[in-house]
Length: 325
Ligand SMILES: *Cc1c(COP(=O)(O)O)cnc(C)c1O
Ligand code: SF4
Picture (tube, rainbow, N blue to C red):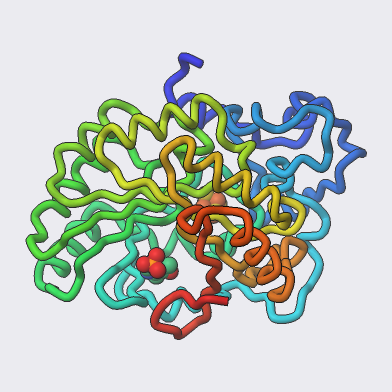
C-alpha cells in the first residue's frame, strides 16, 4: 500500500454493505444493527479488514468491529462510565487516578471503533485537550514533581498529526521531573503505516524514556506490515508492551491467548495487561465470567514462559491501581 496513513484513515470502511462486499459476506449472515452503529459508528481501516478471514461471519477480528444487535441488550451492572473516569478528571483532558502518573486525552478520535471499548460512551468532545489547554497542562505538570510519567491516551493519540505530536513532545521534554512518556495506541496494529519516519524522529529526539503500549487482542491482528511497524518502533529504542481485553468470541480460549503472546513476542512486544472487560453499556455480549477468566489464565500460565503471561487485571472505580483478579 502506498497511500499515506491519512488517506487510508479517511477511506476506512464506515458502511455495512461496502464492508460485507469486501469480506464476501451477506448482510443476512450477520446480526447487524443500524441502531448500534448510530450511537457508535462502524469504522475499520482496510489494513485491519484485510486480516479478517473472507466469508467467515464468526471471525474474531470482525467481531471486534461489527455493530450487532446484542449491543442493544441491557446487562445488569453495565453503565456509561464503568470505571469512574468522570470523577478522575482533574482539569479538561487530564485524568489522574494513580500515584506518579497522569493520563492525557489529547484527542477523542480513533482509527478503528472497537465495539467493546469502555470509552465508547465517553463525552470526548467536551474533555479532549485543545492546543491552549495542552500548554496549560504542561505548565501545571512543570510545577508538580510528583508526576513521573505522562500517559498519552484518548481516543488514540497517534491519530494526531506528526507536527502536533512533535509540539506536544517538545512541551513534555521541558518538564524536568518527568521521566517517562507512555503512549497507549492501537494505530501500529490497525494502521501500521502510521509509524512514519517523522514520528520515529520525534520519539528518538526526546530524552525521556518512551513506552509504546499497543493494543492487540488476537494473533491474526499481526501481519507482516504490523511486524515491520513494531520493528521500526523497536529500532527507535521504544519499549513495546501490549494490552489486550478478554473478549467472549474473540480470545476467550487458552490456545488463542497463548498464540497471541507468542506472536507478540515474535515481533518484539511483551504482553503487559489482559484486561477484564469494563462494564460499559453496549458491551455485555463480550463478557467472560471472573471464574472463566481465572481458569483461562491458569491454563495460559501452565503453558507459557512467565514473561509471556499478561497480568489479568480489572479496573474498579476508586481503587489506587488496577486490581488483579
Ligand atoms: C490504567 C490507567 C493508568 C495506567 O495504569 P498502569 O497500571 O500504570 O498501567 C493511568 N491512569 C489512568 C487514569 C488509567 O486508567
Ligand atoms: S482504539 Fe482504543 S480507545 Fe479507540 S475504540 Fe478501540 S479500544 Fe476504544
